[in-house]
Image (cartoon, rainbow, N blue to C red; front, side, top):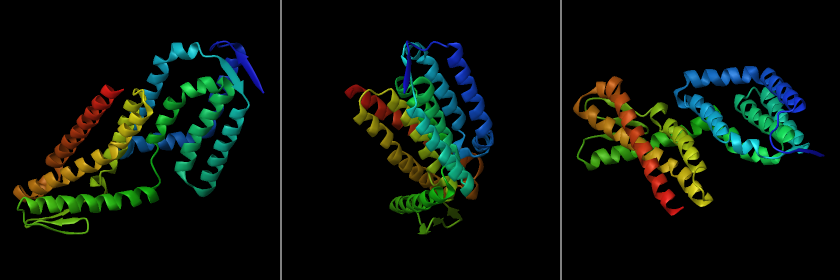
Length: 280
């Protein structure tokens, strides 16, 4: 069953439907959204969530004229998507699993857009909605499964690089042993933070890249870049710790090295984007 309207015209019926939908969604998901914002504020791995939410709103704003000219074809198929999202919410609530509940918010939101505005408009809003999935903290089971091998890899390659350049060091797991101190590669130095942030940046840049193949290349480039620059950071920290001492692994030097390698990451991402754009 479908009803059609020419363009995005805010009739009383449509406005009432959007208002009821927004109020119901906020009421149902307020605890979930409150916890998500709390994580954005307190977890440095996901502080980019505020920027992603704001950028989603910006994308909708710059497309407002295109959206206004898109035909409204309300569809009951959206109710199926809403029901699937509510099932995810119930599943996450029963299991006490926040990730599922938070993803269900996006599913219900998108399903409601399909139901109220139709597929044509929902397709144009797909990226602004689903971009926010990168702002949802992944489950700790998956997080730990990713950080541990990344820590081992970073410590292994950094140790081999230090030894290659003549430094007397050796490694035990994710611990790099120097003559004057022991350097532990902890979760914060695993590179997962940079990886998540770079995936968000690459996804945004890919959105403005016309060809799908180059979009995939651009997004996937975030993985080796994040891992590579993190190894470089551990390597630099090892050199500074060897020369300066324990204070190089903390405070200003540690923060500065993090900013330095992240800036390098952004530079490499934009370099790849420039190369890809020339081929489009």
